[in-house]
Length: 244
Image (cartoon, rainbow, N blue to C red; front, side, top):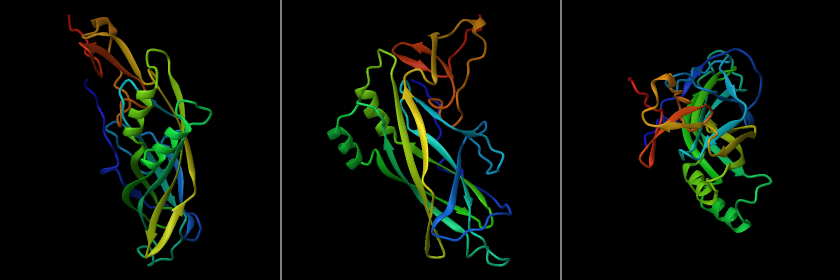
């Protein structure tokens, strides 16, 4: 199986200073604005005009974790000359994942997922967030790949399968020795088969198929469509197309 998968939690922390908001530290000193949909090459530029994803999708045909790029904005103010002292250094996100109205997992299995750190987890990252409306993008695995594997093992993928996962998280950081957190941010993800993967036929596809869709640049199994073709018992994504 050939896959394209990039985790943007490494090297995807970009900061831009903007003038603006007034706030104090502590709870709410960090404002989570959106899940950024990165540009080609899984590049995010930490600007207020970035496109956001309102509802995620994750395909079990290519099991992986869900990559989330959080756009963060500082609600801390600082007078001239005090910017460094009032810069927040983020440390990670605390995440809780639920499956509303689903009976896929029993209560005992849900408890095991929590104690195993699959639905109650902290993802670590570090990025500076400057005061006076500064913006930073940070990437992390919102839904762990190991949790996706547990879902795939329970699901009947011979039929159409859909599971709604709801992830709620807070971002934590430190400002000159003082703890700073974000508001709780809730994000839904539809997990299932063929939500992002289109199996178009046997490799190579006919020449008249055209250019296969490449999928989302940060993870082809989420938030887009990738055209794949079958090769033996596996998949090639994106698909190859015959030149004849």
